[in-house]
Image (tube, rainbow, N blue to C red; front, side, top):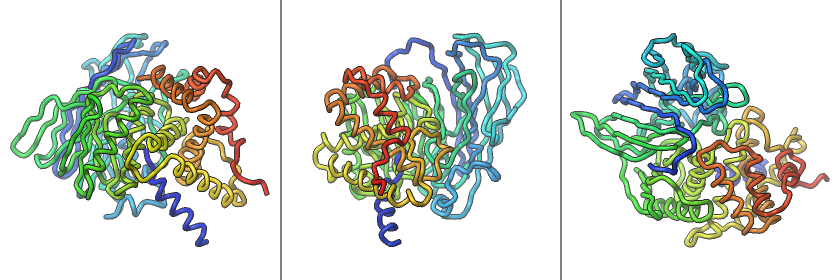
Amino acid sequence: MRKKLIVLLFAFAVALTACACSAPQDVESSKYTISATLSTDNVLTASVTCDYVNNNDVPLGELWFNLYPNAYRDGAQYSPVPSNRITEAYPDGRSYGVLDVTSVTVDGKSVDVVIAGVDSNVLTVALESSLEPTDKVSVTIEYTFKLPKVRHRLGYTDKSVNLANFYPIACVYRDGAFVADPYYSIGDPFFSECADYDVTLTVPAEYECAATGVVKNKTDGENTVTYELQAHDVRDFAAVVGKYRKISGLAGSTIVNYYYYIDSDPEGSLKAAIDSMSIFGEIFGAYPYTEYSVVQTGFLQGGMEYPCLSMISDAVSGDVARDVIVHETAHQWWYGLVGNDEVKYAWLDEALAEYSTMMFYEKAEGYNYTLSAKRADALSAYMLYCETFKNNGLGDTSMDRPLGGYDGEIEYSYMTYVKGALMLDDIRNTVGSAAFEAGLKRYASDNKYKIAEPQDLIGAMERSSKRSLAELFDSWLSGKIKLYSSH
């Protein structure tokens, strides 16, 4: 996700001075078959069948599914929106979502609906017998969800409807347990395994649909339009629907679409998407999917990434909007192709996406940003942040914290985006540009469609540079490098 970093850094400084196809995998992927209908009053009625393949090395007696929509309910312990941004997220007043899981079946047999987790954020599904490694089970979940009116990943505004994290998705099983973190209000509090998707989405007839994957068929009804979508080996599925204008172009063999409703220079926005897709493909390795869509929508932050789809807030424009497009396109590699636990290691994809954005301006022509200027801005802003807060309780400048370990959006943004980009710039200066880019390409190739850990990035950089870098990475991640004077 792209915080409005440029706006944030500027505002912070002012405030201080004032005061669908991919390569085959070695294992069979799970598959989601989703049928969903969105009504004119923004109620989603859906059925999700997960053909779950146990790609773990232990048998499983149950499955857990994340219920992200429940974070939007009245009374949720963890609000999806930071407390200081409620008015911005809900400009027409506080609105809540209502999730109702009506039935769950396992291989066609009905089972109890059991909602658990620290914040009613998990659906637990008992299995009749243990699911052995490589075996498959089919779980069907039927539900309705009344969308909230909110500028967020899942919700609607007067212009568009965001359908992200809208369906029960299997929790990742790691280290002997299912991972089911609460839906924190900062960062991107989710991660998942790659899977195949067949999605049938029916929406009001006046809506265009931008979504993960490719449209295999489109059927007009009396007052509706139905999209049949397909995606292979993607980490998630998301869609945005609204009354859009659409323009398209090519980045190599990838079709790039731009959906918008209020852009004075849509061709410039499309160009940013095409240019970044092309440049990142050259640096990190070819983009394996046939289509990529960038869509303008109501969103609290600058932007948000999903496989083959990026949301761009309608609150940003011009150079800032194009900068967000570049950042979110970088996430198509760092989060999309190479996954990571975004709660435990938020810096791993955000630092890479932010520094990739800087690298883009080093190679692209016709933009008003440069790598050197963005690096200088990041360094001065970070040092200003540290100097300001070090006497007001800033004792922890570590980056290796989970989302729940950050004291709000500002600290999270500076530690993951700003300091993360500075760390990677230091690594690049240490090993040289050629070795650094080779390390990124190796990291992308070795971890494609997988979930990476920090040591995977460190190891890729060490192998490409033939240098020991663990101590340097640790100095940045643990907070030993402060980047401010002790006087």
